[in-house]
Length: 111
Image (cartoon, rainbow, N blue to C red; front, side, top):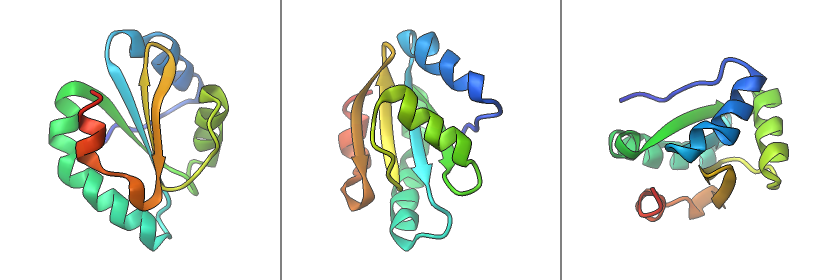
């Protein structure tokens, strides 16, 4: 499977307010210029096929897609970080982790 990408800000509302009641939504916020983010990205990339079977998994590039990244943080009432993983169920962020604490096996157990 491959990453899903956001196309519009209002798509975020739909994912959180509607879709997350039927299927878990995962946002992985990634900085394309940060070496720590690259480490976390590689861990997530290796687990992407397993994640995609249980959740919709979106990659948000925080530099290139700053409005999406900021809006997700605001909508879910979380502090923006990068890299950052956010797991959303039933309209709420049930898990947030950042930097080298991002561990795919821990996240997978929540899906």
